[in-house]
Every structure is written in structure tokens, then in C-alpha cells.
Image (tube, rainbow, N blue to C red; front, side):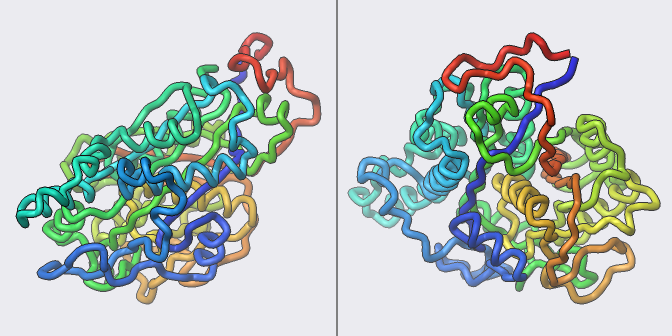
Length: 429
């Protein structure tokens, strides 16, 4: 039985590099860096003073006064990215039944910053300034609730929290919902915002670079934190064709594995990461020879970059040294719960444009990291299939494959009505 095809019909992003897809992509391929000094809260006493903080964004105007009181920084990022994605897909407002639109998002700290502000005002003896609304978005699932409410989506709703692989996993799960006929359209992605707790935690682990992160560089000293949100509109291919949607890429496949090794460190041999990439290839029906680009997890921590490099070699063998690999975390920071979705969005744009984003801040090669990391300058290189990795604390690994969209010559069987029920699966063989 042939599985339904899942395609990408819309994109939206807000991060330190850009507040929309066009600006994000232009700055990414230009080699820009969004890592700057933090002014969101005090960094006194911390190892680093910088991160990829979102600046110069109008946080209030896009929202009605009622929502301004209720939505956290993280929620607002999610809603803004979802609005752009839906608009680009021609789905804002929704022209289809709301119950056929799923929302599957990955998250991390969520409304932690709002809760920290509430607590700070209480401790400073200013209880009247400690608005209880600051606590309404503390729950991790609030991003999915906020996006669903704003979009008017009434289908399946899920929030995935698997640390730094959360939003990558959400994209895979959303594709499964479409493949299983549980929805026609899914808003998939994630959102994560800066908070004192997150910043303090990574500084305590000494896993942050005092300056700017340098993935795969010999002198790398750690990651740079970031914040942001990205959304992909995933859609059943037949449904997209029926409503004459513009198709940007095709979801190839994905996989999830777990190292079950350590709370923060990856399994040293790279076995869990390698199994994940190999399983994603199998899910997509591809071989290592088909992959033309890898968007690496590439955190710039000493051990993780070596393990990912090792895992790529295990899966791709002799081809590993000829496959272009890059990490965009030196440009956008490590956006934690939103990292996977922003990097998947970058992969879709790379497929569309035939341009590979660079690994910036790369200066000195590391003998233990000896692949082609596209140093410092974007590269024009058309390809048909790309892979993106998200490897998280606890050994939570997710790999996603996106492919260049190739339309079929014959009309799709049993096209769905745009205003009808979820696509019937009968007739597929």
C-alpha cells in the first residue's frame, strides 16, 4: 500500500536573523550572525554575555490588548510564525473545515520568562505589578493552544517536549497524522524563548562559548543560545493539488532514536545518531547516495560535534567527505525547542534555491571533525534530497529528510474535496 505523499505548502519564521522568511534567508546565506550582547535581562556573573536574542520586533502591535496580557514572549513568536506560514500557504483565513487542521508544535522553556518576571516583582515587594496573567502561559502546551486559537484550527493538537529535538519531532509526528488520514493540513514547528533559567543552566554546565559559537572549529568552546519560532504547513499532496496550492518541497521521511546513555552527553560511538539517520533514510525509501546536503545539529560543543561527525561517517561511509555539511547555529544560536523547525525550514529553502547555508565563524579545521562544513560562505549546489539532524539532551535524536518536489504526470487518484472530510485512503495501493 502506497503511503500518501506529504508536502510543504507554507513557511514562517521569527528569529534573531530575521522576522520573516525572506529576511531570514537573505541574512543566512549572506553569512550574517544574529549573536549579540543580551539586554533582555542581566548577564552579570555569567560565563557569556551574548546570545541570539530577537531584537527590534514589535511585540505588541500584532496582538489585541486582551492577548497582550495573556501571551508570553514564546507564545507570540509561535503565533507570528504561524501567521506567516498560513498566509504563504493561502490558508489565512482557513478555507477548509477547522477540524481538518492539526497543530503539532515542539517547545522548551515556554513562558518561563513571564513567570520569572512575576517572581521578581513579588520578591522586590511590588505585588501589584505582578500581574497574574504572567503565569497563564507558563504551561509547556500553551504554544499549541495559542496557535490553534489564533488560526482557528480544531484538529489534533499536540505539544512535543524532547529538549532540543522537540520541534523536529513535531514535524515528523505531524506528517504521520497526515499519512494516517487524521488531518489534511498540519501547522508543524515550534517556539522557544530566552529565559534566565535556561541561560543560567547552560552557563552552569559551561557549555556556552564566552564569545560566539564556532561549530566544528578546532577552537570551539561551546554553543550560543538563541530564541525563535518556525512553522511549516504540511499538507496531504492530493489536498494541496485540489486547492491549487504552491508546493515548496516534499516531506521524505523521519526517524527517532534514543541513546539511553547520559542525561546530557551523547553516546560516544555515535550509534544512536547513526541509527537515526539510517532509519530516516529507510523511511524515505532512499539510500546514502541520494543525500546531497546535511544540515547538522552542530552545536559547537567539543564532544557533540565529534560524535555527529563520527555518526555521519558511519552512515555515509566513503561518501561522507564529499557531502556538504553545515550548521546554522553559528548564525541563529541554539534555539533549543525551536532549533529543529528553524533548521528544517532552512533545508526547505536550500532545496528551493539550490544554495547551501554556510557554517560561519569557522577558522581552524579540527582533525577530529574533517568533513566539508561549507566554511563561512554559502555555496550554490542544487540537490534533490537533504537531511537535517536534531540531537537532544537525554539522547533524544530526530532526523528529517526533505526532498525537491516532483509533480506526478497523471492526476492523483481520489482527489479530496477542499471543503470535505479528511482524504479517504481507499484506492491507494
